[in-house]
Figure 1 (cartoon, rainbow, N blue to C red):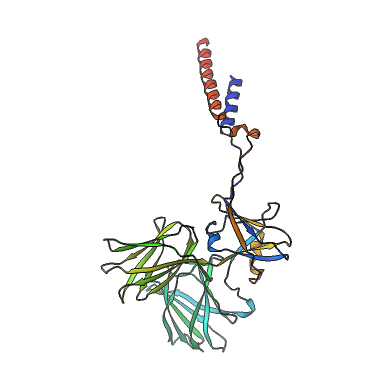
Figure 2 (figure 1 turned 30 degrees about the vertical axis):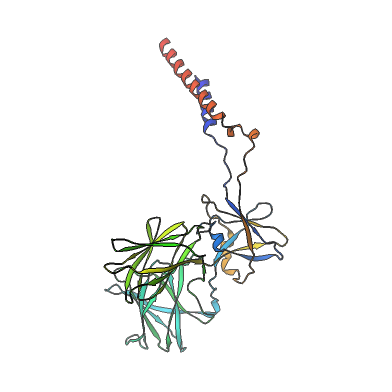
Length: 401
């Protein structure tokens, strides 16, 4: 009996034990030869993005021996030089009964200013703000009103910088009023004044090639704009050219895989630009709530993505290539990530070309008989015979007992 059980266990192990296979990347690309050792930037073009996940988890840089080369993904946002950044004191940050956030910022220098930076935790929302000034933190005077804080998404960090611009002012205190309505407030982390180059709070956008779209206006007061994205370009930016009534205000939603990933309002204009969380899909939809109004006419739709680069340290006279397109791998964890702020943003770019498919190498039949189609039926047949034999033996033993 013990021997029979051992045989059965052995057969079952052979049937269900499959040789582990290496994670398979579906595409590869060539990198131009490296002339000088140092850091290089590999720009992510719209074409290349079509072979990558939006978090770049399936990007690998390999040397001639097939070893992975550490890299980091960086946007084209300019780095803030600490010597040119002066923190401003946040005197108070409170929520009023009406749901407004009231932040008071102090400029204790005698320098007149016309802007300051506010660091905000990433959030997929829009807000309207007012700015007032005061010399004594008691009597307040209006500086600018109805400034829109647009939805912005930074993938390099979990926060972004919003540059608040206003007429040149010598006030010591600035009161920032953020209208939250019935929603939760934004998380304001800090404030400061930067004297360096102009700061863009969102990385530059690279436009994707032209995409086709179809508009359908339904009887339930909703316009459905279906966008076709056949090459799976990353989408983190959308532009709409609208034609219709001179005065309108409509709510719209960006729908991907039947879920609304972002929502906006459009009103009395002809061109609109939206930043949203990066995604990739062959088809997605824009829904416009027309209410009882005639539908708007969408004359064109454009998409784009945040400008991204893979930064890696490459050796001179060595050949490197990329492996791409694998939805089953996790993002690599490289030590280089801890030093990304010390790497200059001004590094030379390398050209990427010749994106090809990678064919899986078939395992030699002579080395692994379990890849043969006829082996598995025979194993199951043997298992069935052993099972029947065991049952019969158990029956005979019970009779003798």
